[in-house]
Length: 120
Image 1 (cartoon, rainbow, N blue to C red):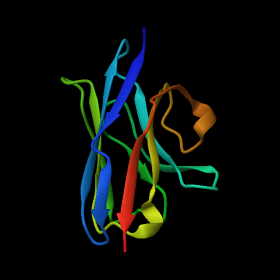
Image 2 (cartoon, rainbow, N blue to C red):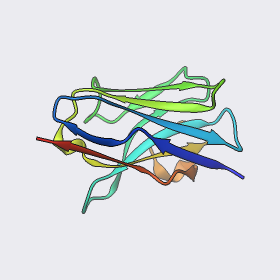
Image 3 (cartoon, rainbow, N blue to C red):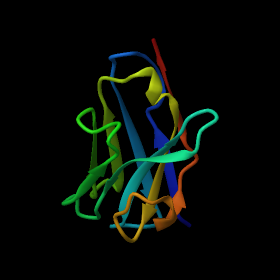
Image 4 (cartoon, rainbow, N blue to C red):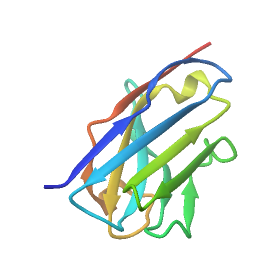
């Protein structure tokens, strides 16, 4: 059974940092992505990484502030978030798929999400 479990969310002041983790079980060597959904908004792409970490993609809104990485030995993907802004407040979801894509439909498995709240 495939499971994706996110952790690391919380409350942080603007300008602060958080590192999200997504531990995967029941699957290996998949492309992974992070998405987020802010209150009253559509789910949006944040970052993605290929199965071997060789390719990464970012939304323009987080480029230069967020870094996606993975440790295949631990079957875990990370999202390091720096210089956080109130606009980054959302539930963050990790997802696993066969191809590295910015499109949510490209991912077959999703975690339950972790809340990130950035105060001004």
